[in-house]
Length: 301
Image (tube, rainbow, N blue to C red; front, side, top):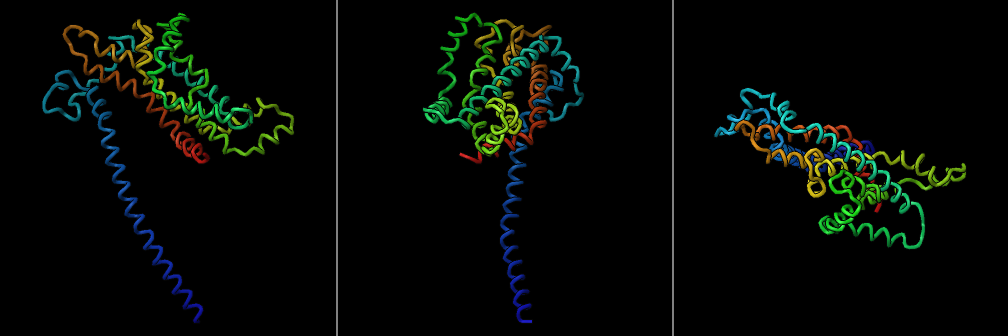
């Protein structure tokens, strides 16, 4: 009986201790939830305002005080965008550049990261540190040499300068993320494949690359967003409106002369929503892999 009563007292003490330990977590969780909701509202407000403005008429857009919800939604603003400017052509150019740049980044960065993670050779660590050091260089430093290079190659006013560099390494950040992920994979997989007669390329292509899906999805989303929203490079290399990507096209649309005296602010808002929609769809489609890739690639240093 004494043992049983002692056990009950210990259980009660443990429960009370557990409650006292869980109580601060509940409060902190609630505080974090409220903070997340407040920050979500703050950061979502500009997008909400853009969507609502894209559905307003010019008169309602310029009224004061402004209305939150359009009284008479102007869905016709979206087809008007397609009539005013070559929006579909700009979308095709952006998709082509994004596809080629993302494919080049994923493939070339994976090969370089495989070399850093699995092979031992003289100067490997030094080369890797120099590669990481390039992340500290601002893009403006290499802007002029790159422009001179592509000018000598006759590629100015073409889409080549926007995706061709991605096929030469893919960037230090992508290499770093994929290398960290490959390091977390057991070397026994490579050794077993070597015993079965597989070569190094076969090990990379058939074994390691399929296991790297989370981090490759992360690189895909990051590269897609960066290239899709890139404004500086297309602005420098492209000169003709039919060659523009969406980012530069929207800037051209902003300065587009008003036709028939009608302002174009509401159409510009509609074009902005149409440009943002693919990024939102891609993020929600790959959200699970995106978070998983970030977490797993940061486990090993």
